[in-house]
Length: 113
Length: 110
Image 1 (tube, each protein chain N blue to C red):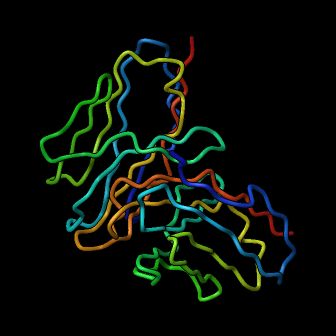
Image 2 (cartoon, helix red, strand yellow; image 1 turned 90 degrees about the horizontal axis):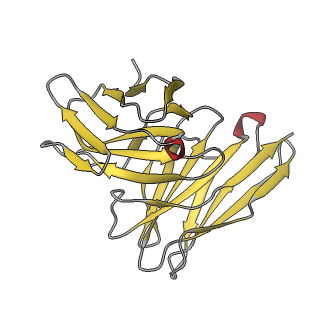
């Protein structure tokens, strides 16, 4: 049973560029949440997708956008990258539109130079 | 005041010791509480949910104190493999937005 997978594992970009991160949820899960984790901090909720729609959003600017596909996989897009966007981006999946009992993927480590 | 606060530590304890962490939350409407474990440069993994009646899983005990708005995690007979960062998570009732604390670092030494 495949767990949550994310790609790529590492990414280096420069300021102003755009990036797309990808996530496949655990089998049987239909809800995907994205988090940003800066060094030494806990994960911060970006948004959650359920039934291909953004269900909830944390305190992140519009530069952060996402999408969920019919197979429940999801993408996180970040435009106009800033140095402060350097972080570990975690995807978590759960079932039935809940954030209880979330399973996290290994994350994508984004470095913005 | 931050929504969820944890002492970052590190807590440095010998094998076999008992250690406890607290996590305070500011919103009295919070309804769901969890502890996650995160190893260095890895993803968080759910350790246990925290119920009003408290719950125990082997050497781990979690408690909720709604009156004082904190949750706790007690680890008995610490093992070297317990070394990790422990994150508490709080979710408001009716919200799907979980708020993580910054985590408490535990180092168990021989």
